[in-house]
Length: 105
Image (cartoon, rainbow, N blue to C red; front, side, top):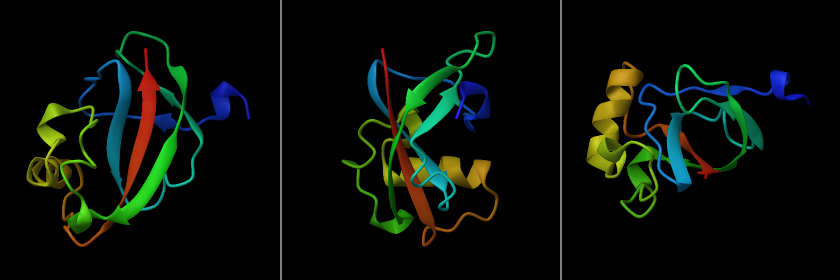
């Protein structure tokens, strides 16, 4: 699969830190996806990142699971729930989510 064919891992808040970053996505769509395109800044070309994923129910998340969350507001289950409800109207804490991990320099 060429870089052009890879899915785009899109973000509402383009805020990342060096090293491992985590993004929590609603449902199973991203579970098992091994590579994606990612934009660090809106005016820069996308880069290819290697992904690792983990599927679980939102209400089982801990602060340790969210330690590397790219958005500082989302590093606790309560903070993440508020953000997910803004991004995904109707989001429920009993839903399945995919933790998507990637490393940035």
